[in-house]
Length: 231
Length: 130
Image (cartoon, rainbow over all chains, first blue to last red; front, side, top):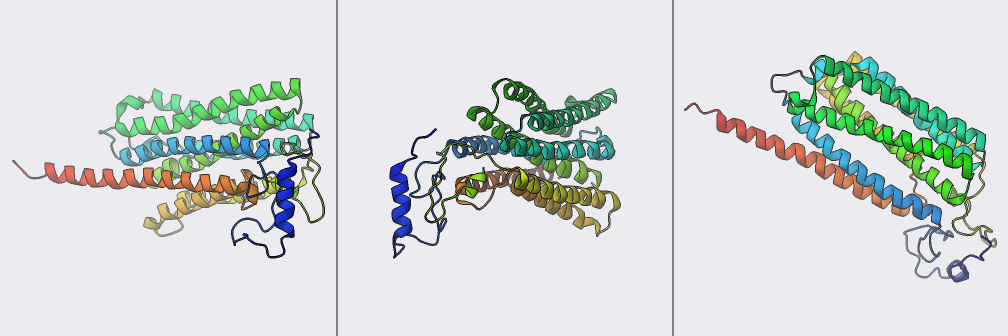
């Protein structure tokens, strides 16, 4: 891309900077215009920023959906219908392992993105694979938890509380599973296509997705498991 | 996302890359950010689990402490992992985040508030003997 980028916007930046009175520059925004941020008179935002912004909007809508599950859980927390209560179904040591897996996977996902920024194929792939394995460990731990509960007759149909519990935790687990599939396709795409611009954009989006999952998990282990253990 | 900041225009110098060109960045500052984030997040997580297990503080304050720690950890994730900053390239992201937080707050707090009142009223309705 050797397009002399947006001469009009450059002109606008120059005019704004060289204006001795700094007319029209209030207290808001950056004191220096920054090219390609889509901010003020600096011209259109770069594709990278627009892609990130669009995906950020999706993630926020996803988090709003999770907030509905959280609200349901908070409301139905005591609706046990004579069945097991929250204290009886949670296993804190397993949650500690799950939390460790997901937090570390968030970290390694970030490292793979750092490698992407350095255009290092090997380390990008290595850290993506580590991220995937940690995510897989998380999903397997959660599956084990659900199977254990089901073997004790604790299933979503039992009470309103259990429906809320399984749908909240299960939706998050489903997100991690889908994220893992996405990760696998990214491994293949990076390997075959290299660091093309659109591939890097997809990696950015994948990173945002994976970190957002960890944020949701912070809410789950606090609201569901830790508050449940002291209930 | 925040790499663009490093490529801001300095007086008297034009940047070479066109919008949309990803900078070939040294991974140093990214790795540092992720390490700091991991450190903070680990400390906050361990604090949460320890508080819930050891009950070091007054019982009724436990839920508040846990929720405060969770919110702090979400903040750490946002800043050091998602790189939501106050930079000019992030204004829109921050505004969207603020709106998201507003909606989440309305949904969660509103549901708890309304359903709590509802269940209190329902209970009162069933109480009087026939």
